[in-house]
Amino acid sequence: MSIEVKNLSFSYGDRPVLHDISFSVGNGEFLSILGPNGVGKSTLFRCVLGLLSGYTGSVSVDGTDARTFSIREAAKHIAYIPQSSRSIFNYSVFDIVLMGRTSGLSTFRSPGKKDKELCQWAMEKVGITHLQDRCFHRLSGGEQQLVLIARALVQKAPVLMLDEPTANLDFGNQLLVLEQARSLAQEGYTVIQTTHHPEQSYMYSDRILAIQKGRVLTEGKPREVLTEQTIRALYGVDVEIALQSLIAIKTRDRDFVTDVSMIDVSQFVHIIVTKLCLHGYCTGKQHTE
Image (cartoon, rainbow, N blue to C red; front, side, top):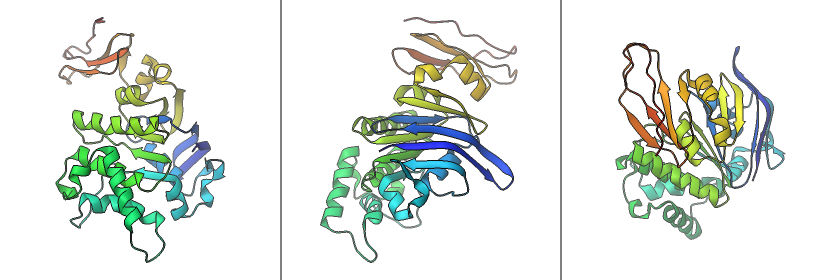
């Protein structure tokens, strides 16, 4: 299933947030919407999901104007995975996943055998069957995100939209969630995520849409988008990028000192955050393996 956004603009009152956004994503594609905090990524999601209706431009789902969908109809096309989910009730993992069947049930109908079998299928697919009787609140952040992905899968919607799915997760859980999202895209799901992590966008995306101040800065394949100029424009830091090398991030904040950390992005690109910033900036030397 394809999603096409054309010339979308949105304002909260007299405060413009999104300006003339256009992009499309098709079956089996993993699109990352990349940008720093506060540039309108989540607002764009809400417009696509139909939660905000006061935008100009258009959102089409397989050629149909998304504005024509009821909430129930929209849920049959697009499943939303939030950053986190909280409930005042002590629901089990199985109950949380079963809630994803709501859009497929008529009024006053209870979930039946087929609905419960679908939940088992979704939990097996994301590898959480062993957690089904556990309390959702007692799970780790990564496990909770996998439960929310399973809940989305039982909607039987072909489009999955993940709003910063790795927010507040440790490194291991970030990889766990993104590997699962990537696997679903390879199976034919249309996957769209918002993120402010360029390294994650590079590792898992087929294409990246970079947003700066509510406008599309650039869009394309990861190696085309993640350039020194793009990173500088998005995050205000200077970088040096070399294939099979390191990206050395410089800073000119005299009071800021970071620890050295290295993330293995792929055989092509690595990222290193340099440490010496006491004299205005620091440079990272190119390192080849």
